[in-house]
Length: 349
Ligand code: AHM
Ligand code: MG
Figure (spheres, helix red, strand yellow):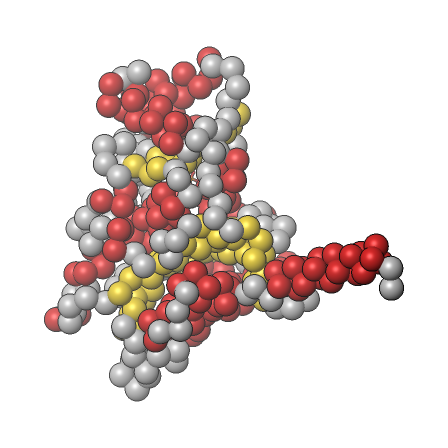
């Protein structure tokens, strides 16, 4: 073989190796690579992420056939602890996470948007030392119209002994989260996670049934042109937020994007920069979003990518919750854009 042919073959093989290596970088393998260890706690974290991936696959599978199956879409007729009408998909996705984790031996309790109280793993099942906090379906109002949806998750280590079933450690600031992320059910299903070592995205390859690495160490741009907020609430906001929105209206270079599912809005902000806001309103001074399983996990992801998340007065990750389903105003995204909103809240300009 000539030297040129040899080097061609070598480069083809290298290319094949690289693409094969990437195809084999599944979620659980990636977690172990990140931790550079096979210790029991690393294995646990890898297994936890793998289970979250399984829950995501089950939800994605049902969503992909929702219009063809009976009993998937629409409301159940029930109202959840938040006073919101429950959709059948909310219930299904909530149960998926319970089923996936019940026999896993990884978690001791789960808490979600759809359950009034913490769910304790029954005593006849293996009990682990982690807690999963999750929003099974984020953006529920998009469910029946085949638009993007998400699931949000955070993992915390159990601390304390839950005397009288009071999971007080769950109320600790978001900096205590050991892993967090989201699954985005869009044209493809993506999973984005952090364990405090950067932010990484995976795409579900339906032919393999695996989440395969898409992008490592995602960095959010310092500034972006998108502002993402429900302007239907304009007259419900504090004057400072109205002033900020008037400012973007009269300043060239801003674009509005709002999908109704913050996982997809924040995913766009993560990749392209900008800011997502859900401020307090007259009716709900703390806004709509829940701290422990919506705002804090997404804040962890965005901070890890070099962005910021605040209530307008303090970092989301420093907020101590008073109750499980506590709401909080949220301003999250690129550093510069978050600072701009903050300056309106704190200084009025
Ligand atoms: P949900 O988890 O009950 O769907 O509520 C959270 C969602 C966010 O994804 C989204 O940004 C927001 O609620 C939309 O609410 P609104 O219709 O008030 O703008
Ligand atoms: Mg939600």
